[in-house]
Image 1 (cartoon, rainbow, N blue to C red):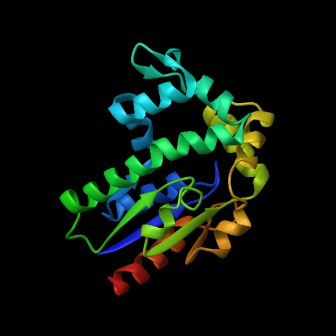
Image 2 (tube, rainbow, N blue to C red; image 1 turned 120 degrees about the vertical axis):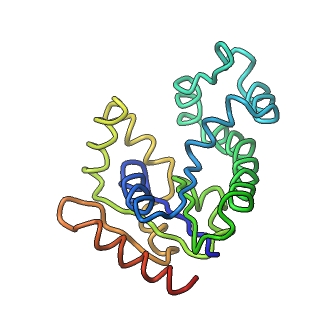
Amino acid sequence: MIKVGITGGIGSGKTTVSHIFEALKVPVYCADMEARKLTDVHPDIVAGVKKLFGNDIYIDGRLDRKRVAALVFANKNLLSELNSIVHPLVKEHFNNWVKHCHAKCDYVLKEAAILFESGGNQQMDKVVTVTAPLELRIKRVMKRDGLTEKEVKDRILHQMPEQDKIRMSDYVIQCNDKDLVIPQVLQIHQLLLRQS
């Protein structure tokens, strides 16, 4: 079984691409979504996050994500410390998900915005980067998350440059207003099936 990472900058379209793979019956593990769940319930993560930000960072047992975002996007060291608390446990959760749920599949996908930054690419056999023009990414995120242009640009600045991700990837999917996405996904799907 092949493990395939799918990544891309914020607003690139990686979730849309992941949904297309899911429609092809490929199991998709959404690392960002699982990390959000784990930050609310995993005792080691909760303890680490409280130690980093203080006990009041949780309100009624839920992480105050808006406050955390404001703090970590203003301080790269805090972002690195937070990632060092969360990502090892997300990696472990992914490995268990593969072993217990999907060991007999031809391949599985792990969707992660910061796949390279977290070192998650090292446990993948192949990596797909989804890319889109910067202005389109900004518009998508402003509409989706209700953020200002400045807030989106700040988040983009804290991610690895898109060209670096492309350079380290096996496949690239253009998710813009010109290129059709489904044929690109189908081509990669066929290549991965042949390799499994």
